[in-house]
Image 1 (cartoon, rainbow, N blue to C red):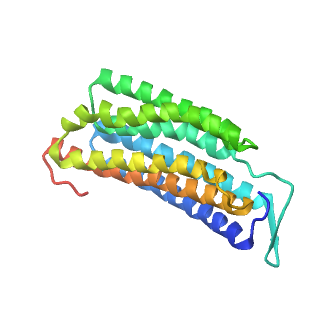
Image 2: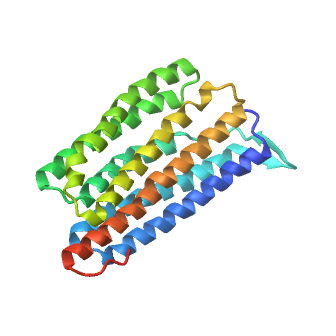
Length: 253
């Protein structure tokens, strides 16, 4: 984390601030939006709002940690001696990533047995993926980072297989008006999650320390906004449309 410029510092600083506001606003929207859907889908919106609420809290702590790790004066950035805490991000992911998959399963309103089975298997795989990725994130050398990153990719591959093969038949049984939206939510989840490994590998490049740190923090932040707030909005729209179909009313989303 040496060589952070003033521009890099403020880019990350503002990215964290923006994401905190985005997650907080998404939480309010999702929880207040529960009144717009039938009881069958309120749990999905509650969990979706819980994901963004947890993220908002951790982004506030990440913001504070970043601000505390550096001092900037006359355009010169110096380390304060307090290390930036990477653990906040991984604690957040350990809580929110399994919930992201569960909310997608819940909004599909599968049978009780299938909902429980898929929620448990996907939730466990997601937690394992995060746990295996953390030692590599804090590793001082790229070899160790690569080993743990490869191990983390195993449950990641399982999750992607389940999203596209395991849920394929279930998606086909969904109402026509929401089928494409569920596919988009699945694709958005895949796209945003696929961005995390790319960011994870930035330290393998020949970029300098400050550029690497900036790229990692901004990259993870963009992926979080898409995976949590973005998918959360899609979950809300799907819930509204399915509620309207079941209640024979006009959807407002």
